[in-house]
Length: 391
Image (cartoon, rainbow, N blue to C red; front, side, top):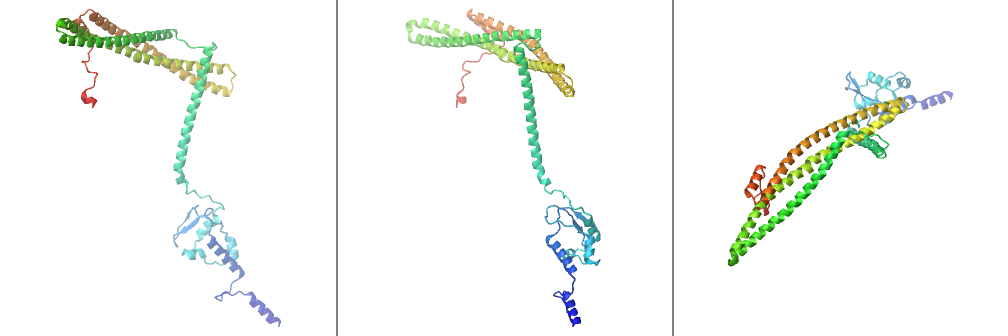
């Protein structure tokens, strides 16, 4: 009885699969673990794929990061303990047709628990990163420009108010300042001459047009009034002659006005623009000079010494700019004076000779004056557009 019970118990403890093979519980557990590995797969973010050449001797490790899965780690001691030192076929290798490799297994075992694979999206983010860096660089450059402009404006405004209220020191070149004042006064007087000459031109032009209309009227009446034909004819010829001489004089006056206009609104204005730049440079130079003097008079520590060095550099830069512009102003004033004397000598002589010849009735002398000064008269009606240009 006892033997039958023991034999039945022994028979119940032996598991039999569908093919009649007997397996232990440990083998079933090992197979379940391997199947779980096949289903879920290794975590390729934390491990590497072992690639062998289908039975070849060379293996390689390819790092990846795009496949997600639970992380596992090969433990040879656990594998040998579960298998009882009995090598079993690799289900993954058999399913893929790959021969197991002991060197690959050892590489897997030696891999660290957490491996950070290189990012596959780095190349895609390069253009955006470059554009962001370029935008950031432009913004920083604009900020620095605004910062420098603000500091410079503050210093210059402070210096200007200090000079206005008599608290700041101003750099003055007495000789140069006197020449600048003379130039400003001369420009005002020449502008007055220009306005009067333009007014004379307008009035004289209207007089010439009136003389021409009057001469045409006299000529018409001389044809319609036989009893006064000679008298109307004389007056018509006189008015036409005066009109012709008036047009010649008008050409001389226009040439005079054009030369004065160039002198005032171009040559003198260019020199005054340089003077304005010189005055701004002088103000900046005095502002940075005052700033350097205030820093030098204060306490000396590491931060203050660095600020003094920076202020010294800025002071030297603005000093060089001031001296360069002062030299430019001196040269332009000298050339302007020489050019003014030369141009005005010619223009005043032309104006005098033309006016004298016209009112003396010397038509030949008037024409000779214009030829002497290379004044070319426009033919009558040249200001009007031709019929082809009007189309």
